[in-house]
Image (tube, rainbow, N blue to C red; front, side, top):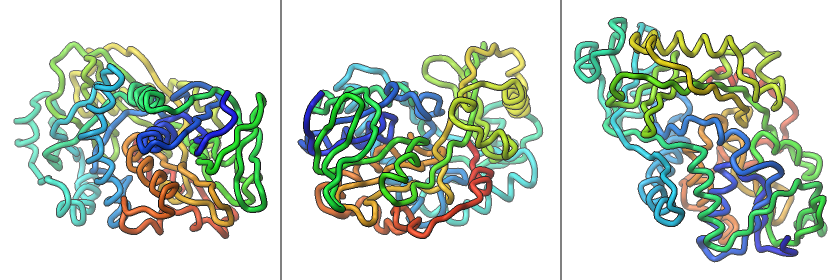
Length: 397
């Protein structure tokens, strides 16, 4: 194990590996620490959807960050595939944001007001929807057509980021962090069960486990695990020509490996007791979620009754109190940064998070997003408690 590094990144999900990759690409000596396996948290079971539509992003800086990270994939995906030889199953296709009732029409049109000036999209009626895909339900009343959306395999993406970081000089060590080494308000390294690693900066990108750093930092890291489940189906019909989602029924995506992904359950699908039961419970697939997801999928595409269930995935997403990521320097500390709380958008926002943290490490600020105010950790300086259920119920995936 290396005795020192310029920067230590804690957590090897997509966010942590993105940070390590972008740091290493700038010639910074990085050590990436992971207590389990690469992609063993939320990144392993994520859909990998890179859509700009939906309620996960809000007008202003949130949508700016989403668009910036989406654009990063144009270069990053082929760059990683060329460097690692991995197929990320990356695809860019048009998408449909379906409305099966008037409530969904209203939800979609409310977002259109501020999304449409930034994204090539337009409303189409039910006949136009079925002209694109005749197998869709006759209950559909219309849809938002997006000229381009994207999707990839989140686990392969995670592994490629990790390997790409290694190829650029990063060290990946499987060790659990047991504490921080500090000199006054300046970080000097981290402690692990196998010894200390000294550094000039630490990035906490531990997903749902990030809140464990609260007592070491003396600063709140308000992240809770939010359960989510999705299904992979073997559907004998032709692949869908578009990526599909709806506000109340989740996504339906024909992947490049031939499987169909449907889901996902979110905060609205669990009561308070089950929603925040903890990481171990979250990894257990449930029959209720399986039946709910299958019914939702059949409501949208009745022919999916012929599909065979291949895999049911379950796990936690790192939920912040306001559903927005927590990115940037920790108040009161020199050299400690947070990159966590991405809720259901860690895959989508991984690249821009990596660029932002790299900017802060190198320059003390970032221009990747024009206004970082709503993402910085200091917004939780006076945090005591919050009703995470409110944020969880707004999650669509």
